[in-house]
Image (cartoon, rainbow, N blue to C red):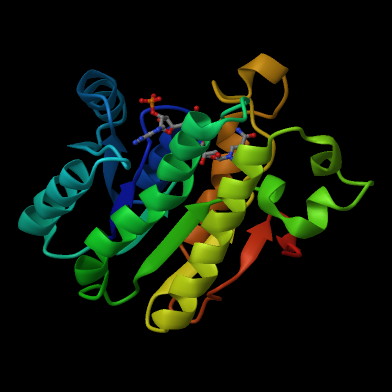
Length: 227
Ligand SMILES: NC(=O)c1ccc[n+]([C@@H]2O[C@H](COP(=O)([O-])OP(=O)(O)OC[C@H]3O[C@@H](n4cnc5c(N)ncnc54)[C@H](OP(=O)(O)O)[C@@H]3O)[C@@H](O)[C@H]2O)c1
């Protein structure tokens, strides 16, 4: 059975991805920073739960140690946890980068020994086209007018980390995804987006790549996205 960890999976796109991967027979660990929200989500889906705050090194090590003790390996890691800060100051910048970029480093570094024990290790990063230099400079794209400097910059970092990890670990697939504008708690203030089930299908597509699948790419549902 494929062992899968999804960070920030207690709601939104992560929760729907967990649901769909469970339906495909994955052994899914819901990572959530809040014990109650995580346990509730895992119980609703029939998934496993690990407490995992991507901004907390001890929490990340302990979550991966739990999976190691139970499974001895990790096949699929989905970096889904993310926040959207609308302000622009030092504390908001630290929070944005801590969760959206440094969190990826913390979880990847803790997961690498377990991923190396998989026969088809696969890491999917839910990044954003808001972090694409091409999109934010293209007046025909909605990202051109997005006043979300910290979200965009931290997602650019998430995409770059994906590329750098892909280069330094050729035996492991690392791909970044723009999941599509989705109606979740994150986008609720803007009143936009499609159902999370639809976006989760694209996460699932990358999370179920076979060993010959691509690595080091940045994609949306239409294919590769310009950086
Ligand atoms: N919605 C969109 O249109 C869209 C578009 C492009 C990319 N994305 C990306 O997709 C991912 C999922 O977003 P979403 O739309 O599903 O938003 P969401 O419903 O707000 O879900 C975000 C999840 O991340 C978790 N999280 C936040 N900080 C965390 C931390 N420090 N440690 C662990 N988990 C943490 C949240 O947990 P709590 O419940 O504890 O807060 C929640 O489970 C994000 O990376 C987002 O940037 C979304």
